[in-house]
Length: 184
Image (cartoon, rainbow, N blue to C red; front, side, top):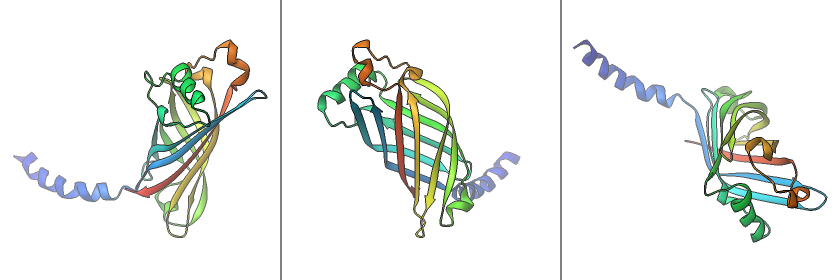
């Protein structure tokens, strides 16, 4: 009987607690990568990145469909999906972690905030702990943009590069992330 009295109170409090969370999201984020070698440069672009950031807790997640990466040459895209990323077996890459350096208070005022995101980066089915540096920029209208540049080693994620093309693919792949967040 006592539990039945608590239920209406909990139902009244729950919306207030949920609305206090400051959540930002995007479905049109951009991730690009560059494999730069003397033999060849390979650039992949993906404009369909999904991300959610909870400013209350600092939790951040993003997901990237591997097949959504676009390349200058169709053959590069085919090799990327079939031979290296095996996108039918490993359809997405993701990051799940926590951001420090920006929170609810900072998102309420204009400025550029240096952040650090610590968590697990999963590519090709292999999760690796990483720390990624970046920025959150809040403009005068309250729009929030997040950016980051970091490197990824393909071998760390079980991506095998055949000896025949080893000189055409960099060991360290440069990754750039740009996210334009909106309130959920």
